[in-house]
Length: 381
Image (cartoon, rainbow, N blue to C red; front, side, top):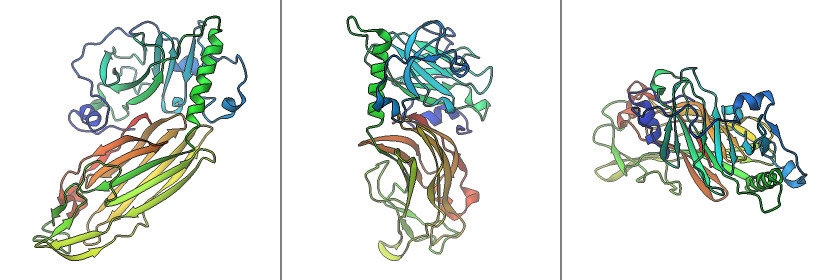
């Protein structure tokens, strides 16, 4: 997943999502703030972190996500709930009643990262550190952590992550600690399996009610206006230029793609003079691959203005989603006209993934006037 390559790119990238931009001037904290990390990716991959099988819960053990969220034991014997649903994307979390461990795969040995929790910066790590332990946690509380590269402008391989982590509660009096964690992990898996489908939607829209036609490149140029959609980033609005959605069925791991193109209206002096709907043949969503608890989806939008012949609403991205509720866009870009909005609908809840304002209506006149922007985004839904 590449970040936008521009001055202050990391700030721009995070400002257009719900994440928090970390100040570049922050002083590095201790390499492993809050204590040593025991659940690291190297130990997970090597098998030094092991699952704890204290008892059998058939429903949860067979449910999607059961193998990626479970009670586990570190090499030193510490117990925690380990979430490896995003291991293939380069990040894991582990939570005990007294700490949260985050571990990730850095893009370079000298990479420097910052950590935010629920929108507040809590650490700026020294260069080369790729893990973090948070000991200022409250049992039974859920937190959203962002892991942000502070020097992203210098390397196109830099990426950011976001993870939702629930801190388990202490075992009841007389209850075995491992059994308690296993029970809580099973409960979370049950919640994961509650939503049978997840929908990713990508819409493009013109926020103005009308925009002036460009001087060149269109059948109706200066003196004409093109109808817009007249709204902001509102997932409930029925008006858009293009809409592509991917409905993921977690039971079958299938992906059903849907495409809709809004009609283009042309006005002169307030009167409608022409209208036409572009073809949707080159837009769509399809499954790239899947595993026991994840699906990878490719989404493509390509739709020209039926009255303009040198440019089109154009872009594509690939996204990794887990049934446990994590996502990561790992490639993609788009032309910067009109506004672009990606969101996820899951079990009645809507999560904003990506928002990008249009650069200029001059993009209607030709691609040379409309630069590409990179998609980015990682988080939980």
